[in-house]
Amino acid sequence: MFKKFSLKEKNRIPRVLLLLLLMVAVVLGTTHCTPAEDSADTADTVDSGETEETGETTETTDTAETAEEGDGDVTLAILHFSVIEGTTWSGAHDRAGDRLAEKYDNLEYVFREEVGPDLTVPYAEELIADGADIVIGNAEFMGLPLQDITEQYPDVYFGSIIASDLSTERNFIRLFPRQYQALYLEGLIAGALTETGNIGIVSAFPSVQVIRRTNGFVLGVQDAAEMLGKDINIYVRYAGDWFLPPEERGIAETLISEYDVDVITQQTDSGSPLDVAVEQGIWFVGKDMDIVGFYGWADTDTVAVSFDTRWEVLYDQMINDFMAGEQNPETVLYLGMESSITLADGTELPTVDIMNDGNVGVDAISPAALPLIPQEILDLVEQRREQMINGEWDPFTEHAFISNGTGLELEGLPVPAAGEEVKPAGEEPTAEWLLSQFNFDLQGVTILE
Image 1 (tube, rainbow, N blue to C red):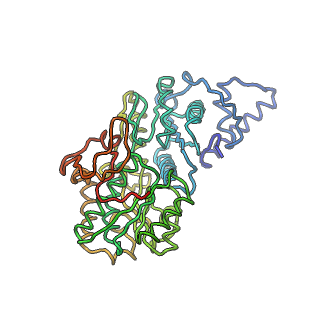
Image 2 (cartoon, rainbow, N blue to C red):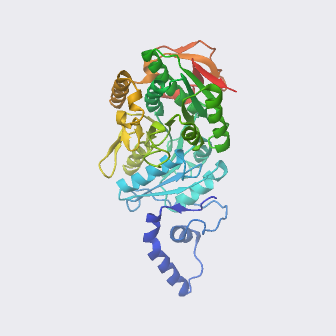
Image 3 (spheres, rainbow, N blue to C red):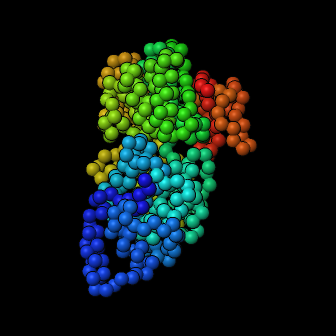
């Protein structure tokens, strides 16, 4: 279940020598060690699950080393709220850690899986005792508790994903990618592909994060519909959480059988909606990762396109600030396609992009889907992608925001009435507004009960 100290195998192997030295010390009669010696020497020499689970907080303020104070090495620790294997969200974060460890010779990536909010702080403190310099909570609900220990560990960078809360500290950094940009491109493709005029979204639950991403997709669908003279319905039904395979399957089946959906996507994390798309022979649009190229889930006969998230772009900024000894790093990172990273092999990747079976851009569109998409849509996908990479265009600036009258009422922020124009076309919304106040669906969506 919970891994006590999960490390990649490539990071475990060099520590065999430390284990042998420890065994020699035991033979010579050294049978006890201080807590500091225990955290420094033994935690890295055992497999996950072998360390003693005490539940105690380790005092580490004076022992944690920063890159410039220690030997130049930096440890990135990611606390994953879910399992990694078979998930696109935590899978993308884990891939980011691996890629960064390959990029920097002096960087080690360590992680824990299935971390709930009650375990965030004790796990973080153990990792800090073992040398972690940057600690990330990869979901807001379990990342926010890190804020409580920022003053106790002033030389450590902490980070948490943003769902709607924007609280920060000097060394508590909040981050999220502008996934809506790639979702807009997906919407253009989905809008061109539907023949029944019905597109379905299996979603988790109403939140600013979910609503914002869905709205990016909706704008793309609506632009395709206008360009092609189509009448397209977009149906959304909530499962209630991120990972509920049976419920997600049921929703996908209902969208197809009762609403004649022939293109389906998701704002959930299980593979159930994709399974249903394969079984029913309809198009699927993926999220978070290139599910065909990276995981081998289904093939391009079903997956029309996915968007791929490169969390390493955001983590890379944190790592470089830390290595430079920056005491006051930027505390809200909201990066889009205009930002990128160069990997160890020389590949340059924007923060988000459409991707499928290892291909990007227009080439990411399924070979089976490509002939079904009018050239004018292909040209627009290519044009808008290039403009966003160059920082010249953004769907949320270009379009007006007209409320659907549905969404999530927040404290002091009711859902705008149906038909109300909340933002005019051509006005750029602030990052703060997009991240914490975009609480309404855009006009033209049907939210199913």
